[in-house]
Length: 190
Ligand SMILES: Nc1ncnc2c1ncn2[C@@H]1O[C@H](COP(=O)(O)OP(=O)(O)OP(=O)(O)O)[C@@H](O)[C@H]1O
Ligand SMILES: Cc1cn([C@H]2C[C@H](O)[C@@H](COP(=O)(O)O)O2)c(=O)[nH]c1=O
Image (cartoon, rainbow, N blue to C red):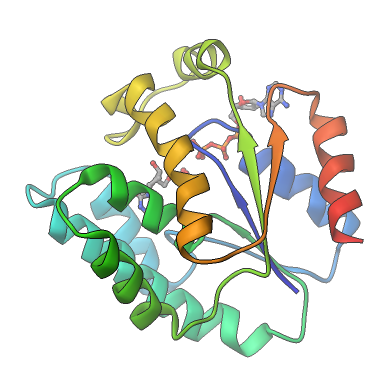
């Protein structure tokens, strides 16, 4: 089973993935961007937010995704794969950029993934207050510096992205305790 943990920056994705690792010690734990050798280089470029062209940024994420699917996801489809982000983030962030049509975003993601998508997507949904608090507690990267309004619009776009990709979505309140969120995810996997 291939599942993705989704949510805006600081929603608690990595925290939950650490917990899931304990429950599924044999699972393939992975992430986008940056799970492969090429992906690590792409991650550095995109998080520096140096790309002047939004299209270039979108294509860099797609290149990371194509490599991730080929190297990590496709060879392990018979195992439990737990991914921190997926094509869902790709579609959501691109929808908000507004420079690429919805149809092109979906088609290009299909091209990059070869139609391999998570079977279940968990969205850790944050409130504005909690997002702003968590952002205030960390050093921000280039994308986080775009601010809380921008990130909250991405959160709505994540829901739209799962609809466009026709994926099963489980939405979880990310302000709940870490333990309760893990329980909710496990309940929906087993
Ligand atoms: N349920 C929770 N309640 C309170 N704090 C939490 C919860 N989950 C995570 N946190 C805290 O929020 C911060 C961000 O968590 P985490 O790094 O897991 O988020 P993330 O979604 O992986 O972020 P990013 O996308 O920016 O890498 C951390 O300080 C973490 O300890
Ligand atoms: C996959 C993907 C990600 N992003 C953004 C979302 C985050 O701001 C960063 C990734 O950082 P994280 O610490 O791993 O959460 O990249 C994006 O804009 N487009 C994408 O396709």
